[in-house]
Image (cartoon, rainbow, N blue to C red; front, side, top):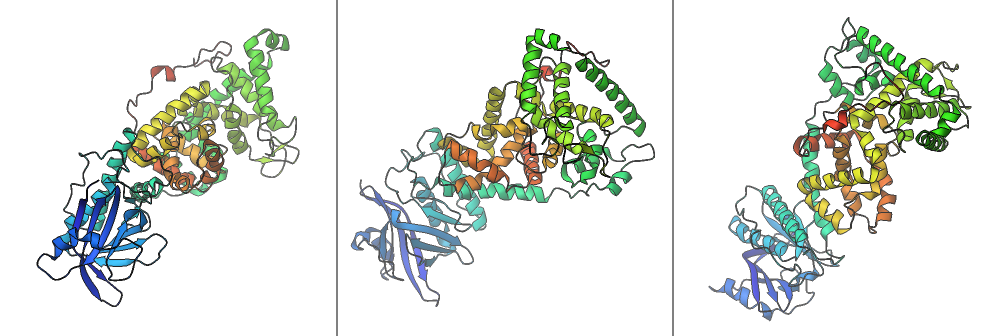
Length: 568
């Protein structure tokens, strides 16, 4: 390889803490398959800048890192560049040496400095870093041809900028475009030492900052307490401000004792614009439907079950799944406890209520939070208790539990996912990748580099809507149902989880499908579900998937083969 001068910054002045300064010239040169960075003091002659550039070979390459002394170093031996302004300064260090040498430039050298940054990035010599807000980290394996080719059309064109923040935003966008192009051409180095993780963290940090700005501008909504809840209704029992109440369901903290009253609103069992009398009529109708369905299921005799292969198979799977559902929960801890019986009855009722769907594994888990929220207190023997500790008559509560559950399945279209877990989860993963390609391309690239873009390691959360991942699932489920697109919110939510947790994955040393499956629950435990929902709102607002219309067949009522509701 012939000698190639990539860039020269003619007046690059070294300074120390005492104010001593020596003016010199900095250049980046490609020579003999390697890249070099060198600096030499100016000699005061009329040709000093030209001499400094072309006489660099007179400087012996080595590890000399003494203040004000010239250096010529293979770029693979460099550590970091850190930039600051007022005045414009560049701190440089080498590997395994904590000493930073500090240099200053004037505004006349800003364009050459920009070109230097561009060349370092284009040639794979350095990448953006997180060591400081404006910094580069050098690739220890840097050499000529680090990238199989350098796309000529990708350039850091903006040479004029008001401040370092503006410049660095352009630098990060430039690097992002470069990586997207190289990824499409499979030209990103496969070397594990290539600092793609460092670069991804630096670029992704700006995404997080943008999201935080959005979240900080979301209005703060008052908590839903018993007092404020009572005041939210007029004399007819109608919400005074339904749209605001829906926002409070999404954003606000809620008194846990109020959840049985709030959930029917969130699930749209009770319309937000309904009066108290209308809700009472809805409850009566749903109660009638529930007990009609319950009676029909009870009338099914064992010979009928044995003679119907689908029913036999369904009830057998339900019995098996119920027996292993949340057995550490007081409601389901004891065999033959009322909690297990309630769960079993609900699942069999739903199977009869919706024969085309029947029972799908995962439904048992999704029912649990409804049961334990509407019936929050249980004795040691699994007996439902009222707030005074007496045995609870839970029969009047069961209809609302069932219909709220059924409404959530409709709102979120979770039935479609449960029908075909592998296919539907795969489709969600594809849509997540599509969004990440726009929001945080380096996150998407990182997932593909590790063959994780299929998101197999978090399929269980797709199926259970994060029921096993968050202690307070109702914060999340309220968001799922009180948003504008409940049928798509899982897509936005899982994308939000990946965005919020991406930095944690970048710090992992072992990246395999197994390690991700082990790490994902731990990472989720560090996240605030309410903030994940707000990130999902940001995605929904700015990066919503196309073709938002819900297909007609998704909203069609099931073909009721057994149960005949009067509203069908």
